[in-house]
Length: 178
Image (cartoon, rainbow, N blue to C red; front, top):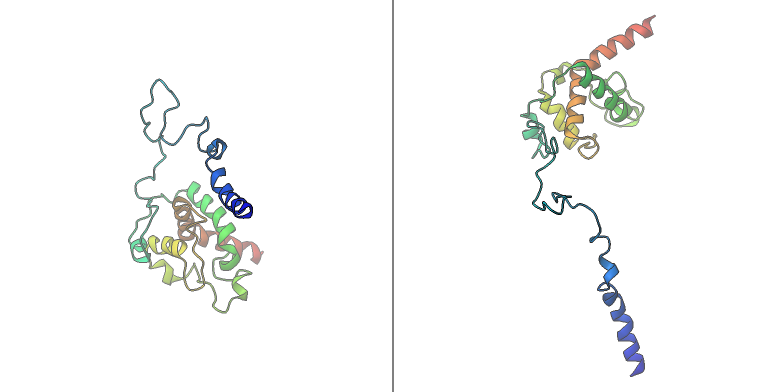
């Protein structure tokens, strides 16, 4: 009987430990919860801070590739956007697509299928949403980057591919010809 009582007590110990006061210390601390007012005299819920929701046009959750293709690029292709896109392109795209965007990157050279040529006329005919969708959902050999790049960052890369990649390729070809 003693052994049975001891076994039951040992089995119940973890369950009872969860009911002790310190098991909720992380949840019940002196911190401001989401949309909670830091002012105890004015406890009504606070509105979202300015610019804490997605900017109209930069849809965060796109349903599928077909919906992505229909999206219009909400980020103007100015110098700042193209520069940011170039920086992100160098981090995420160059290993497969290469600096020129033609699919001659170090990783791309080891693949059975060559990565898509981002400077091709075939891509020029497609809308910006197609590039955005490919980065979001991936392709045959391309991984999805929806978890790595925010929607705005993906649009910056689209702007770089559209406006800056050919300029960078031309500049690189001119410097290698010298």
